[in-house]
Image 1 (tube, rainbow, N blue to C red):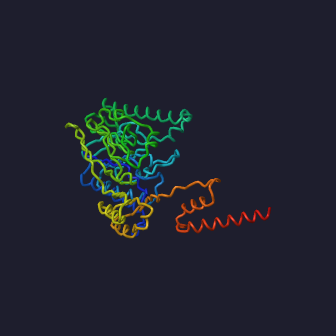
Image 2 (image 1 turned 30 degrees about the horizontal axis):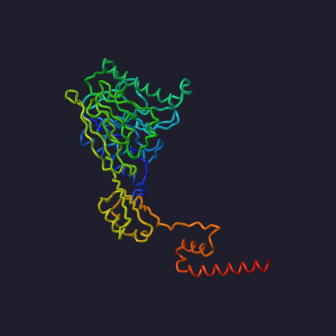
Image 3 (image 1 turned 45 degrees about the vertical axis):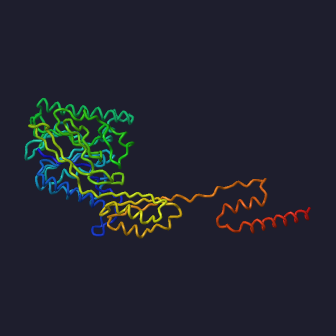
Amino acid sequence: MKLLHTADIHLGFKTHGRRDPDTGLNTRVLDVQESLDAVVQRALDADVDVFLFCGDAYHTADPTPTQQKIFVQCLRPLAEADIPIVLIVGNHDHPVTFGRASSLDIFDHITGEVYCYRKPAPSVQIIDTKSGPLQLIPLPWPIRSQILTKDEYRTMSPDELRQFIEEHYVTYIQRRADEILEGESGVTADGTEQALSPDVPTVLAGHVTVQGAALAGSEHTTTIASEPTFTVGQLAQRPIDYVALGHVHKPQDCNEDHHPPVVYSGSIERVTFNEADERKGFRLVDIDPSRDPITRTTFVETPARPFVAVQVDVRDVDEPTERILDAIGERDVTDAIVRVRYRVEEEQVAQVDQARIREALEPADTVAAIERSVDPAERKRRTVVTRESGLDEAVRQYVGQHDELTGMEDELVEAALELEAELKAERSGTD
């Protein structure tokens, strides 16, 4: 059985984007659309049995009609090809307020085999495919607002609630796994009960955090640390053949060299320069219970927009502009989002030709920034003038601290001494 596993599309983010003159849309929205189109096309070309999306279709829980239209249009070829689509609701897909629909609920009303899960199903789900049944254990993002509607949970502290969710989810996975091992009944799309079997391909699809997962450059450790977290062993239970995950944007197999794979497909587009060197893509998954290993996966990169960060130190360089241009020339900036940072001495600022730098960046899709860091010129040490200092000494110290007075020292000292003499004479006369 062949699956395509993807997640974390985040349609709607606009970081480093601009208005596209042809469509009126933000260029970053178009970038995501292009990458998602490539994912769907690969699913069609590979003739997969199931398209598995593990959460965070949109960047916010309130996507615009345009963003929803783009997502529907991208997935439509799958429905037209009779490929079942499994959608797991992620944290960005669901509103905080209890009772409000998630941004993926609209797919329940779209023609085609679309299965949308906003909460754990009460039994193993059976998805009919052209290669036979797929046993699915859905594990969407835990929605705290639903839990807090019950009186017995409202007084829980954040830590107690997190622990409760972790225990609840682990128990849920264990029960579903036991049902399969014991040959109990699962439920098909039309509600029909059907016997389960450990010999049938089984997938856990979730939007959760795995302990020890490596984060992408745009993700914050402090945010992840406050979330319910699960060990690989709690997810990778027999007879599960593949654990498909969303939420963490860095593609990785958290159970590498062991069975089953516990995989974050990763996001399909870069968001910030912290992800400039990270691969973006999705997973093709092949499950065959008759072989060893049962599950094999292939990471496929998307045509994600490249991010290029150029950083150069031109202090002590005779021709700073040329050095900056050389640094740009060493990188492929074509169709990329580019940021240039250069460091100069204060006296070099006027020597840097901004126009030539921008000309060198013309092949780029977007110039995010051209930033300079200036080392100030060394200042002469200030000398403290005390009451014991004579006027002659005080004036000479003052002149020495002001470059614009260079060459006038003797004249100013003489003038100061004359004023001092006049002031003394006036005081003597008054007394």
